[in-house]
Image 1 (cartoon, rainbow, N blue to C red):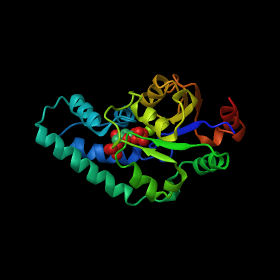
Image 2: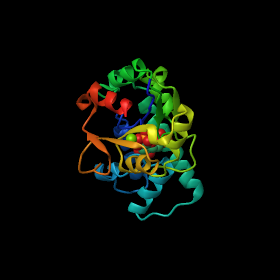
Image 3: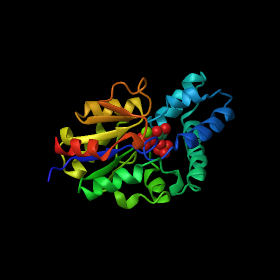
Image 4: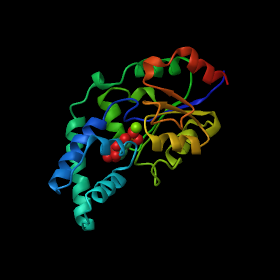
Amino acid sequence: MNKKGFIFDLDGVIVDTAKYHFLAWKKLAKSIDVDFTHEQNEQLKGVSRVKSLEKILEWGNKTISEEQFNNLMASKNDDYLSFIAKMDDNEILPDVPKILDYLIAQEQPVSLGSASKNARQILEKVNLMNKFNAIVDGNDVSKAKPDPEVFLIAAKHLNIKPEDCIVFEDSVAGVQAANTANMISIGIGEKDVLHEADYIFSDFTEIENSFIQELINR
Ligand code: B16
Ligand code: MG
């Protein structure tokens, strides 16, 4: 049987945690007197925690000490974790379990490839931990998306060549990372934002099993 490596981003692909990141960043921004909009939050998708705070400080024209930087990161994460603590499987995005179960039934290796350091906790909260053969997250990488590191490590864990991997991503940085890794990129979201992806769907309800089968048979 043909084997391909299927790699899923977390935030925006499996669950919508962007709304919790937004609330936590918004509170942080307010505490240092900086404006923070939904549009700016969009630009933080797929971006690491450190890079996100650097961007917010840049937008607000603020310079702070390293100690304050670290304190702000820690308190943002505490707030974010308090939202995650209330999550359950109702927050899984439409048809995600269906596609994961299809891949498992077809004996296809499946990995997570997320920038988040909280990925394992989130997967546990929504009860999806047992669907993955490998989990690669923000704790495993030294270079953030658009660097391909996270997806290349995932391919290695799955024992599948990068060119035989397929990545599902909702962020521009993530699509670029997949393309640089020489993988097939599937954008989940808006066409005009994710135009660099090989394929784009608004969500998993648009993806038929026959399309997945075609990818497997290639
Ligand atoms: P954490 P993904 C990313 O997750 C989020 O899209 C991004 O907004 C967040 O800053 C990043 O994880 C780091 O998350 O603070 O939990 O380590 O889309 O790569 O699954
Ligand atoms: Mg994402």
